[in-house]
Structures are given as C-alpha cells and as structure tokens.
Image 1 (tube, rainbow, N blue to C red):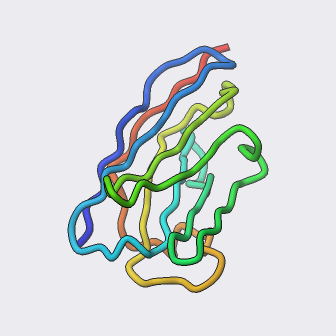
Image 2: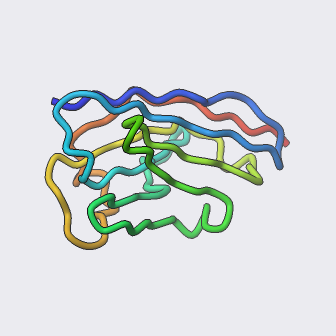
Length: 127
C-alpha cells in the first residue's frame, strides 16, 4: 500500500503563488507515474500535471502550462506542484495520485489509471 498526504493549499490573490507538497509513504519504488489532479465544485476531476520518474518526462494540461511546475524529490519521497500566476479559475481541491506499476513512456492522464490518492488540499484564488 502507498499513502499520499497533500499539504500547502490555502487562499491567495490572483497572481500569487503556492507550492503544494505530497508526502509519499509505504510500498513504493519511487519510479511510478505520479500526478496532480484538481476538482472544482460541480466539475469533473481533471489532470493538471504528471511526472514519470522512470524516464524523466512531464506533462502539463494546457490550462496550467507555463505557470505550474511538477517535480519530485526522491530523497524526501515528496511530490511538489509549484503554482505561479494563479487565477481564480485555479480554485479547486487538488489531489496527488500515484500508479502502482512502472510506466515506460508518457504517464496516463486519465484519473482512472491511478491507484493511490491523497485526501486533497484546497486552493482558493480570489480576484
């Protein structure tokens, strides 16, 4: 089993920045795809960014490209999401997720492909 615990959410004004963290513990090789997803009220959960430590590639949704950066610190077993130039439409509950098996290539961006989820951290951006 893998446990994921997010932190770092909060309330900021538009244009501000936040850094989300996701502490990873349990039975993990550190080489499986991980991702950040978000779910705004009344909307479907959507992928924001993914990272594949096995091959070193990343993916960003168009809505956050150029503003958000996903990274992983293997020594600390922590996934990060640096969020800059935040907009009111970024307001949502943010979740980190991990796959159970290693992927050799681009990470799957479907939420259904991820086996482990954190409890979420709320991000609220005011205009």
